[in-house]
Every structure is written in structure tokens, then in C-alpha cells.
Amino acid sequence: MRNKLQVKKGSFLRPFKAIRYLFEKPGTLRYPFEQKEPSPRYRGFHLNDWDKCTGCGNCADICPNEAITMVEITEIKPKPGEKNERPKIDYGRCCFCGLCVDICPPGSLRLSRDYFHIHFDKKTFTLLAKDEKTDKEHFLSAEKYSIFQASLMHRKENNEGFVSDLKYSLFEPERVPMPQVPPEKRKLSFIEQVLGYSQQEAKKEASRCLECKLCEDACPAHLKISDYIRAIYEDKPDESLRKIFEDNPLPAICGRICMAHCEEVCSLGKRGKPVAVRWLKRYASDMIKDYKKALELKPIKPTGKK
Image (cartoon, rainbow, N blue to C red; front, side):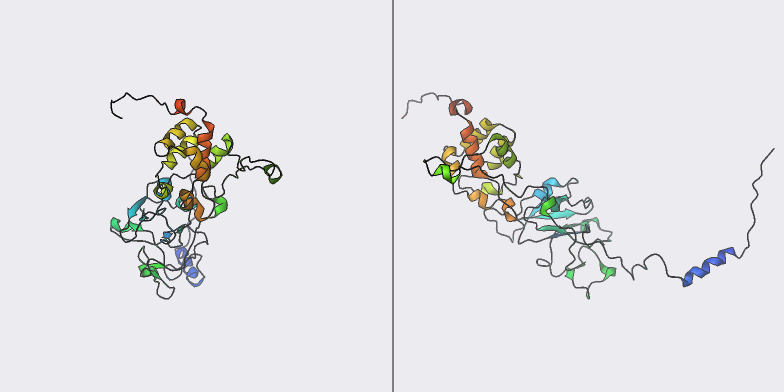
């Protein structure tokens, strides 16, 4: 037998029942006349404090979508430990993950609570990240801000959202403590006060380096600091020593009494402790007992000239 679905016919007036909802409070926002306030740590468009930014480029290196490009700013004069480059964001690629904020050593890069940008020209989706201090023209007060003009060039001032927290940062702000001889033993002899890093301590300290190479510009000898620190992290002290010897023939001495200008400009030192570059140099030189073998030194052929 064929089952027939019995459908009860309703009144033709049933659709008019929806009219009663016209007089009830809506459950949605009356956008754009009403706006929903973003959460305090909302991840929107970028903010960058150019006075704090060192141009290290860590934000561009960590970006999973390659949405950040470091652009040279001719108006800014480069100096030791700071580049005249600033991050430019491509919002056609950015996924607002916030990794660039968590890896920023000086904490200059933040995310605002602005997120409106509607435009038909795709070129408008790339912009140098700035904040109210650098770009007062496009950051407006609440009285001058209009949701109908909201874009990357029309934003609210003092609208900071997601910011870096050292507790959850992607770098270690504190350096590995250097073991030292206690005073009661030190007073009995002329033994060195600083004992030097162990293998585990050196690798842990080397892992803090972000390889931004700001330190190499400040070093008078322009040592390949990031290269020899990476070799220490990879447990290759002989390779580390070879990198040091390319520019410095006295690593054991400089590992103890160097002025450490490199550490003064280390980006990690902006909010934490700089990488112990000098002590890592000492570790590499002290670990190698046979320099001739490690450096693969060979006598050169005589030229007949003195």
C-alpha cells in the first residue's frame, strides 16, 4: 500500500504573524548604527611604536604567511643596534595569529581592536604599521571617528588590543646564570671568579639568540656572532671556534674581558637580559684543547719573501 503524507493546511493569514516581531527588541545589532565592542585583547590591525622598534625583522621571519616585509625608511638614520627598517603588513595574507607580537623583543609591535577595511583596490591592503605617535593624521578620537569611513587609514586612537606578555613570549627574557666561585673560597686564592658555562648551560643560553644580527653591527670586529652561537647550540664548538677565528684571534681573552658592545644592543635586552655573547665566546674557546686540529691549521708554502 502506498503511504500518503497527510499535510494539514494552515491559514493564509499565518505569514502575517511575523508582524508582531516588529515591535520586539531585536536580538542582533542594528549595524552600523550600533557597534559591538571587541574584546580587550582582540587581534585586529597592527600598531608599531617606531621609537621602540629596532628593525630586527623577527616579526617578518616568524610570520607563517609571509605577510610582513621589512621596508627601509630613509628618514630614519641607522645606528649601532638599530636598523632603519620597519614592518609593512599585507592584510591580504595576514591571519592575525599574533606570532609577530609574541616574538617582538622590544614590544613595539601590537595589535589594535580596529578591524574594518573595505576597498576595491587590493593595493590598499598593505600598510606600514604605525601608531598614534607616528601617524596622528589617521588615528582619530572617538568624536571624529566614523564607522562609515573606517579603514586602515581611518582608525581609532588609544584602541590597543593584543599586546606582548613576557610570561607567554616566544623568547626567553632571562639569561642562564653564570656559576661563580663563592666568596669564602675565592678569598683563599687567585682562582677565576667566573667558572664558565657547562655544555648544557651554554646550549640553553645559545637557544635564546634570535639571530637578528643587530649585535654584529655594534661589534668593533664585526664578528659573525649569530653563526658561532648557532654552532654552540648545535653542539659544534669546533665550528664555533672557526667562525670566531675568522675575525678574532684572541677568543679566550675576549671571552673574559671584552667590553661586550654587542650585548648592549641585543634586542632581548630591551625588556629582559641580553644574550651572554661574551660568555658563549669563552665557552667555545675553553672547550677546545687542540686549536691546531680544530682550526685545521696547515703550514703555508714559503713564498721566498720575508
